[in-house]
Image (tube, rainbow over all chains, first blue to last red; front, side, top):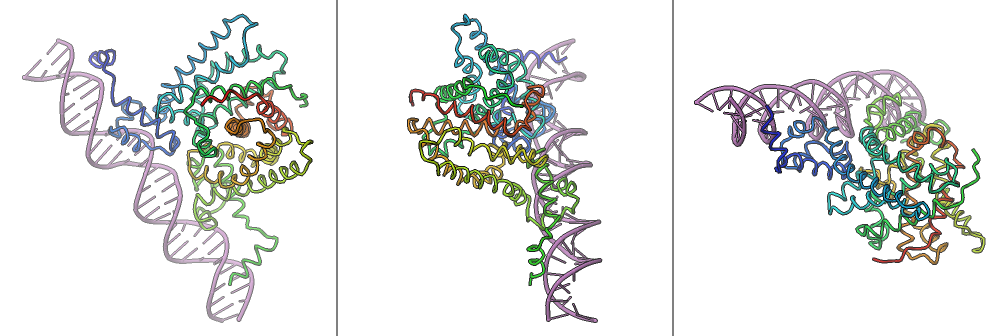
Length: 225
Length: 225
DNA sequence: AGTACCGTCAAACGGACGTTTGATTCAAGC
DNA sequence: GCTTGAATCAAACGTCCGTTTGACGGTACT
């Protein structure tokens, strides 16, 4: 049967074509959008035949899903691990900054540590949240499901005085600021004239977390509607 | 020469075809993205012939530009007017909240007051900042040029103790939160289970402005890099 | 009546797209 | 040595795209 292929995949030698396709798709999806990046351009960049994309993934959508899953899976795993560490502490020692860091750091870090592909993925991921493609958005929401399911109660516990509606809005703003910080790297570098260095992961995370923590700690507006 | 047409345009009777095209394009660009919305779908929705789009606008890109300009122009004019009012006050009476409101309110308000088209434009506009289409992004940046040129010094004056790099980052986060609040309406309504009502313009603006004001007022992180 | 022009229309253009097909190569199993 | 099946390849499939064309009615001006 497929013993040969199974043995080869299980051994060390991974499929070059598949990985090349993922790398190329990641960059071009980020650069031109999902609709704007054609399979012809992707396969050409990967140095493989056009039909290889369908042979290995089945469709363009499945390729996109694989691109997202490859990076999102470890990112979200790390987020949950940091959340576990945060919650393992005695309640008195937990700080909102730390909770926010658990939420923000892995995304920004993974997105920027890989020199070039990470840069591409950061753009793609930052855009995905509000992408017009239902596909891209649904992929992100699927992969993000457990993260929000675990983080929302943690935020609520860290801010017991905040009305739930206010909390949800602030998480919403947080996601927006984070996504923009990831997707809009060229923008701030251009506007700041190079003063703001987006390659400084720790600095970016720290600034973002402090900004958000202060926003979360703001007094709640009177709850009119 | 073109006296007839000029007279007709100058008179009350505006061109129905042109406006129908703008309305339809606004909704479909927002719903499916610029690349995903075909001129065939747009003209069909507008109830006009396919060739009318090129006759009246010249190209798909020019149609997109017209869609954006129609809404962005009054929004940005209002932003600058609010900034003028803010700066006309004696310095002692100015508040950061008010400055942020001048920046945020017109976008959210115009984006949501129009019952349905505004909803579409809000999505489109919120996405435009990081859109993969160079066209859409460049349109927004063009229309936004004067706004940032006037608001950045105002922010710097309102927060004289904040290092410039920190200020730029926080403005960056602000833009992200604002864009996400506009583009991600369906998202927060779904996540909150309807608890957060995105049709409540005043409430949204107020929550966002307070959140951002607290973030801006946070102590600056040590300026490492 | 005649001219000029605007707006609309159906039809077609060439090109790019995602996907499918069938042939070819090559290493592993009997 | 022959078969099997995974992997790659060039070529083609049908569809949809943005744009162009040329003809047709209608209105305003001479």
